[in-house]
Image (cartoon, rainbow, N blue to C red):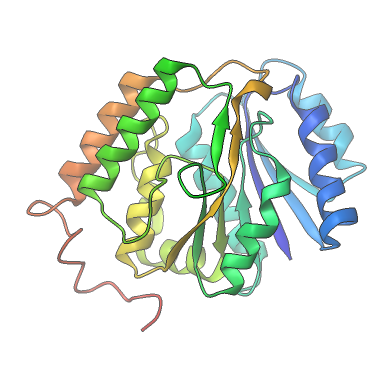
Length: 262
């Protein structure tokens, strides 16, 4: 089973585009069973109403936050729910809900999983990847952020750290939750830091990473951006203090952590 994990906050303008594309991609193109797990993170528009209507037509589980809790808590709840209801050989695909992540790139993510990767990141920075609709400022910030992450948390062969579009083996997520417990996502209130934090935690447990090309379609984004650069930057610095040598265990590894492939 493929589980699609979607964090949703005020996405009424995007859902009618994204959800039918996901359904078509799995039913007609890939011919694979899938199930959507979506977390409505305290939306104040028609997102909740629309999700309820779609849940009557598509295989979908809805998690509801009565108030907006942010991407950290939303991601935690999505992954914990998926881990609870899945089998070890299932796969999780985490996508954004704003229609900037096209389902057409999912098959290449699944191929890399089949090749032995535990985590596959949809990457703009490999051959065949790219981005459309991102202005010069956002493009520069994104490149600088990835350079920062690669410097402090180098993973061989990994070029894309900030993309939330990823495939995960369910077994890997279950293991990292078992190891870190409630601290699987520790920096819950620090914006998009969660995207990097998952990479750090999964690397510590010995997960195998890979990349597959994708084109970010920021020109299709209809909802307002939820990213606050100052909060996310502070979160990145906090991660460095927590996990980078000599303060943390990034380079030396946590000696007592049971590795995924032991």
